[in-house]
Length: 217
Image (cartoon, rainbow, N blue to C red):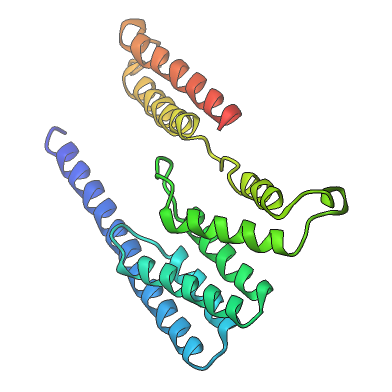
């Protein structure tokens, strides 16, 4: 029994590492393929299709990815090109794809991305150029732009703190329940209170943390 547990733990760890390697490998190949497709469409002058594939490349993000930076730069330059050509809607699509792609691949504690923040400024400026709703008819260009920027700055869910509480609480809850099942009962099914007490309190604390995180994340 004592030798079986380390072997099972080793197999489980090896499985996790293998799955992580497969996921990273898939992200690398897909991000590169989408980026190459985007560049191809851009050289053909089919910028709307290029935007679509830049966005897909950006969403296949992984740590230290060189393709992420290239996709962001591609969307920035396409937005500039379309704006200079008078295609404001196309420029907005590129900028929104940049902001959305960065948001979709963020971590809970990610800092604001400088290029995404710059893209938000450009989105607010372009939207202000098109005028606002009738209720905003008396607002100047700077005021319209500032209003649009405030809308873009709304906090994105999940909240980092409550998201952490949710995930940790769920892990503690499930782990504690497993400990209760494995250690809190004897062979006849009778509850062993001294052995089950700590895991039960852990399960209760984990459940509370999970519920609080779920409510406020």
